Image (cartoon, rainbow, N blue to C red; front, top):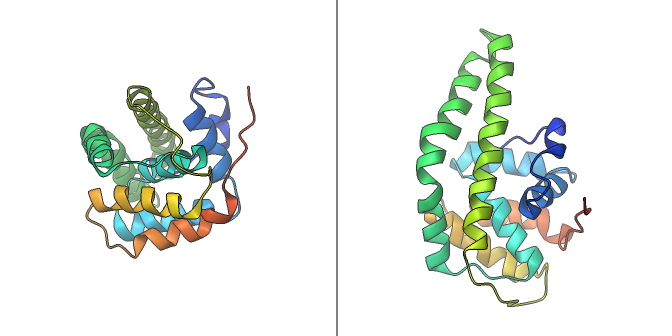
Length: 173
């Protein structure tokens, strides 16, 4: 996942998008997300969503995690990842094209976050714990990572990086 500075004015009505922009801008979070994406091929939008839920005091149930992953699979596999792969392949041979593909990648990720938010609004949520609780964060991330068949160790890479940052206060627009 790459969130660009120019995307702060997009999807202002989506609290998850605003949360992601705020969290991603924190020191070390972008690097941790990109490392997880590269090392384990994880969907960072889903992991940011797990962080968002923990920030709100919500536990993502195993069935919900699986349903959300399935909901995002087609978009992720037919749009986001192919655009990213093409951008990376052309990064050195055709930097101008790669830059245009980066813009397309950002739009595809923003659109996936909008999909996740629409899915979120269809769910029933209750406050399960204290917002920003580290255990809640770890459990949400573990359930999402499990859906992508990544090693359990992947949970620690991101949860350790963001646990001290939650709860995140997102500026209202």
